[in-house]
Length: 428
Image (cartoon, rainbow, N blue to C red; front, side, top):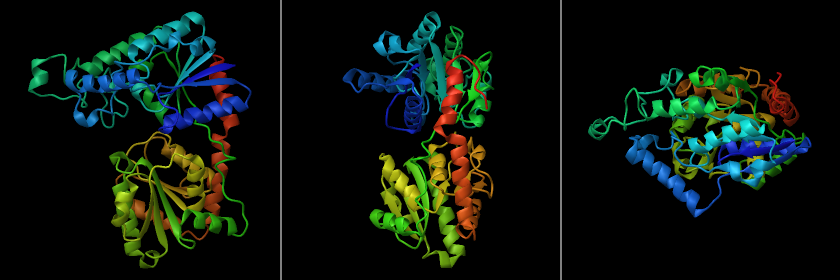
């Protein structure tokens, strides 16, 4: 089968990683796959800048939400490209920030409908089911028809310009209605990458009468795997190469940007400091390895040793960091189905994470990790203590590895996607 996978970028962000892994898995299964992303060009760069500026100054977006929303004003018509003509299946992933605007999406739905091409859309956030936002947080207006959007300003300027700012018929409402008209033009198979996300998007009126299922992102569990059991010699050599301490327990924290408020790094910091404060013997036994942009700025925030790695794009190095660590931690306020948890578990790491989004379906309490409520540093410290001092951490590690292989193997994910591509419903 000829499959065109469309994502805004090829190498940046969780959606691009997931799309690339799916492409690799489909190729290994014998299918022809092409990847299409937003080309790096002056014109596309200007489109992106114009869309952000137009959002800020013409539509009343709050400055703090400029990348939390997308009104689909700019994009590229992919229906005239040879890759579109070649494809039997057009598979969208994350297509915001001037990759596909609403006009482009409308043309795409129409062309796929008239040419008989299967249109599939994997949701990595909730934007396809809302008016303009990617993560609605506490807002529930999207379960009706949007409007009164908290991402829009309400000030004197927007009062003078009724089409701007917050109101019952604001930009979020108008965009919501536009999406509803587009979705009615032809069939779209929506796929959420977690049960949690699928359950959420089904609450949106935009999904009424639409096909919505959930399929996990695939992971190469042969590549992401534990080191061979050789008495610890390979692990010691790996830590030496990475300049990590040989005998300490490594707590690994990974984020694209350490300073992203959603990722909860300050909560993680407080939890670690509380842990080594109550268990003084751990002060010299525990080391934090933090991976992500701006990690080096936080080396002095921990009572114990902290070793920073700036953002790691090279997957072999990322795998080595998982293999070298002992516990993986996520302290996010909101998540869908983090790739990092799957990677860590596949490498044999027990996981301590917040009970948000799709994470509860990824971790079995006290079997391969622990779940805690978000924003609670004390609870996070308790969970870390439980794992760090667990007398049989190797059993937790083996359970993590086993579940990752069973759930996220490429063969299982490809089988389910092929059922979608052929026009059916994906089986469990």
